[in-house]
Amino acid sequence: MTKADIVDRVAAGTGLTKLETEAIIEGFITTVIEALKDGKGIEIRGFGSYKVKQKNARQARNPKTGEQVFVPAHFVPTFKFSKDFKDIVDKGMKEKGTAI
Image (cartoon, rainbow, N blue to C red):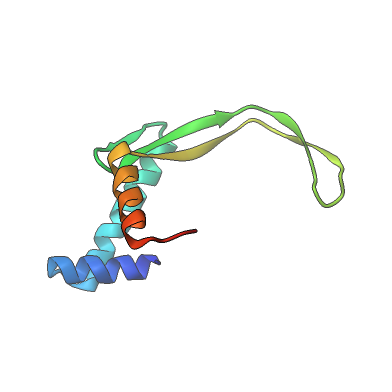
């Protein structure tokens, strides 16, 4: 599913225009990025939480050449799904009998 698909579904479900819905979704994404950039976490009950974690500097290996490379310390955004979210997805997949 793409962002355009999400816009279509939300617009159909809310009665808003696609243009209005796209602006809302873009606003949400921008807000999440800006909050994480400022070092703030975001928690959406029943959905999950966004945080920023620091990864330590380390030695790594280029898989193509086998050459040792230094990876400096850096920050990465993470997302942890809520227990409710995981349970709903698990139940839905089991009901459909879907195997991955």
